[in-house]
Structures are given as structure tokens and as C-alpha cells.
Image 1 (tube, helix red, strand yellow):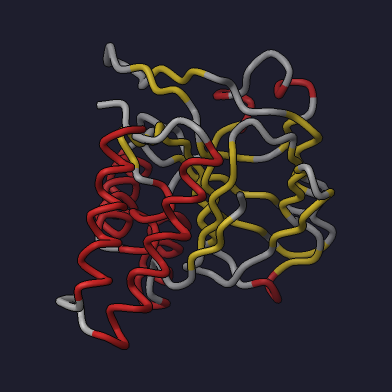
Image 2 (image 1 turned 45 degrees about the vertical axis):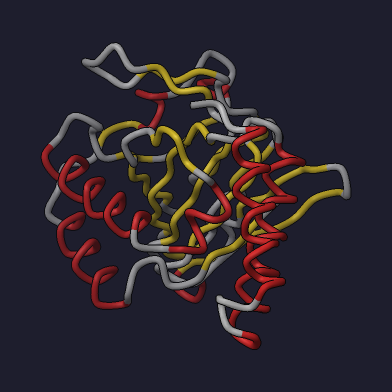
Length: 227
């Protein structure tokens, strides 16, 4: 399931990110590529152990924790420290699949990549090309969102970033391990949670039907969750 979540970062916060990134040094994006991705990856990246990536990454994590829609869709258990990339003219990232396991540098932590995340930091009219193209069971889906919006999609998906032909595409990207490993179960829980929120807004959260559905939701999480 592909889910787009708007306004995870405000426009003011995006401007702050862009200002900080403009002052930072960038490196070849292949520094974090796996053996397959190494052959098709062509972009720039903030050094993941650099000050800019660490500080901005912490701000991304704070924004995610404050986004009910993100928490509902991802049900995160572990989140890989956010990375940041830049695609200029001629840059792109060919068809690939993300590594199944990611080790957090300089720690013993290993993360199973259930979901991949792209948080857009450039407006769509700032660049041509650069679409994130995701292949799933219903075909290809193209994603090019406003700055501050993010997309969540299964890390099992083949995907690519089309070559940028004008301007510059800047984004944060990372992976997460969900408490709910199964994509179908996670999608059902998200739909159920959204329905509960809609009913609660109309009937009140204390309505008996809303209370019962909320109990079903949490009991399903108990059944499916991996602590």
C-alpha cells in the first residue's frame, strides 16, 4: 500500500532545512548503496555521520512522532536515521529494490526494512523529471509531492527515480521496521483506524460503537504486533 501524507514539515521548516543543506558538504550518493543499487545510483548525499544529516534527521524524527497519520500508517517500531539526497540535472536512480536489512552505523542496531519513506524538500515546479516511480501489483505509480509531504511504500517494491532534466530535487529518505510486519495486516489496521477517527468525529469518541471498534483495533494490534 502506498500512502501519501501531507504537511509533515511546514513550509517554514522546509526553508530551514534547505538553508542548512545549502551550507553543507555533499558526497557521492553511492556511499550507502548496496551492490545492486551501486550500478544504477547517480546522485549526491549528505554524509550520514555529518552534523547536518544528524541534526536535520533528528528534526525529521520529531516531525514524524507528531504526525498521527504517519504513526497510524506506519506503526513504527524502529526508524533508520533519516538520510538526505540531491538530484541535479542528469542525476537519477535506476530500477532497484532496497536492502532487506539495514544496520545503523556505529551501533549494534539492525532494522528490517518493511517500509521505505521519501520526504520531499523541493517543490514540484523546482525541477523537471525526478519522479519516484514505484512498481506494485496494480502497475506503476508515479509520485512527485509538495515540499514537506512524504510517501510511504513497501520496501519490497521495485522503484526508481527518473532522471532530472531541469532544476534540483532534494529529499530525505529512510526506512523503518513496523510493529506489524505484514503489509496487508498493516493496511487493514490503517483503514480501520481512519474509519474510527471519522466515526468519532461525527458521533463522539465515547459512542459505544466507536469504543467497541477501538477495542477491536487494539486487540488486532496485540494479535499481530512484534514487540
